[in-house]
Image (cartoon, rainbow, N blue to C red; front, side):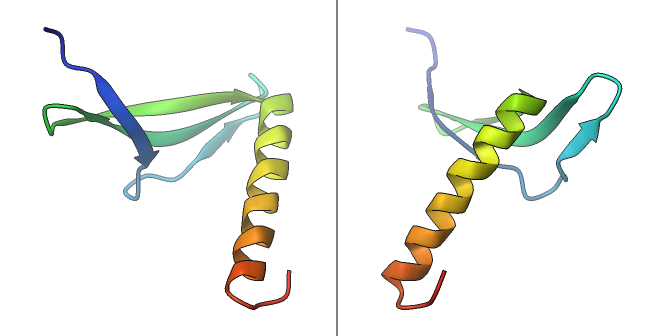
Length: 72
């Protein structure tokens, strides 16, 4: 049976980069496999996807702040 990806996390060892010529961003991630191993990868996002991800993560940060009693 092939090894499957269970989830992906942000890679703490590398920074996200933006390529203005390609109008794409690259976010380093680490794939976690069901056998316990990991693989390095990248999430490649267009400028539209970067904007959408920013909106989504901003909402998550606001929800987190409200949950811990802070102000957004």
